[in-house]
Image (cartoon, rainbow, N blue to C red; front, top):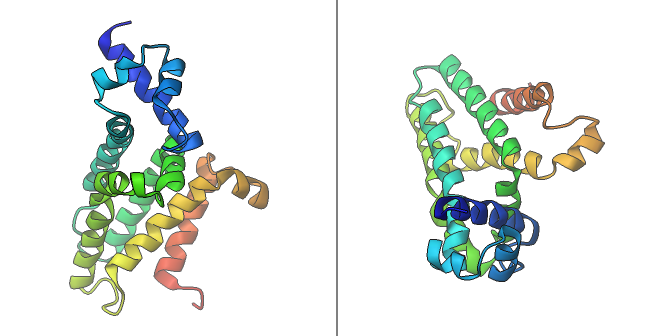
Length: 201
């Protein structure tokens, strides 16, 4: 096995293990056993278990930011805002469903002192970018001035996170599967209806 294929195999196996057991629950020996490589391979390719963990998250961080920057350009009016939010949510759901390991890693380790800084560093640009997008719409009088763009950012993105994280439960509760594009469209429509119309309209 070449150096590059060994490195990629370690990343794949480590990400799967971190998603299942969390950072603290996974040893470098276990990762190397699953990757069928020498224990020294982690040091050689990544330097440490901490840097391997960061590498497991970094690709997702780059991919999500690329998605956001492609979709969330400044808006011109309310229809433009709705269109871009719908497209962003659709792509964010798709990415999250296809990369559930990322969601599970974050849910396991976000409250851990040993991993919080890494998660925050890799993904801090995500809420900041979404907040700037919403603040720009607010400055153009498209969004109510009384609302906090940072709170709106968290409210919208956290809903996607929770839906994906508990997709197995939502399937049994709603008799629907979040992997179903039709059901995801329903979720997006419901989110946008509440966001723009509220629950009393």
